[in-house]
Image (cartoon, rainbow, N blue to C red; front, side):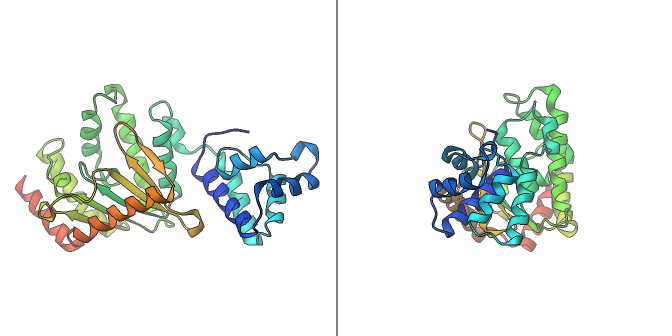
Length: 289
């Protein structure tokens, strides 16, 4: 059955492909072995296996059992991959907002829900996972070309619900790099901005969050895109980067795209202020408002 790629279907496909490669089997060999074991109703074509490995098709429990037997998966791997298969088709809470957001934004939310770490780089606004309600309302309301006024409240609610992931026990941390411009731009007026800056000072003591400011004195920015790099519990899943753009927001898992954004993030944090220095600058800016 064809479907939209989800984070869990992508992870399942990627791990199946890894296990197949470790056994030095090609897709045709795997399909031939599966089809000798399965009845006609559960047989698999090479095209279908290819879609499964890219996260674009489902696999039945019987087919998955055969696949895992052929690639000599351990019992732990079998248990984990069957759970991924089961959860790949689940509808997350964010589907309530499907009428408001694109599939790319849905993918951003899914990534945030399944990732255990995040590293962000923002040049225009405070990172969305760290925005207060009033600040988020001002940001969303300003996007008049993309957001109807009647939808502002629901989009802000969606953004705030995403933030709940930061408090989950299996989430290990967000490291956010923001430019000095992002925290100096007075969004929503002085009162709203003071509240936002105070939240940035408070959040690190309550949640696994570290904030680094890239000051004006650092010079030219190392990159011009806003993005979040998501990491997962199992290294086999690989990192995924979500690049935030008005014209082409998109999640990338290709090695080169992830590597480029990782390089930009590393360059940014190397030039940024320390956490303590960043807090001092945020306090100074808040006092100036």
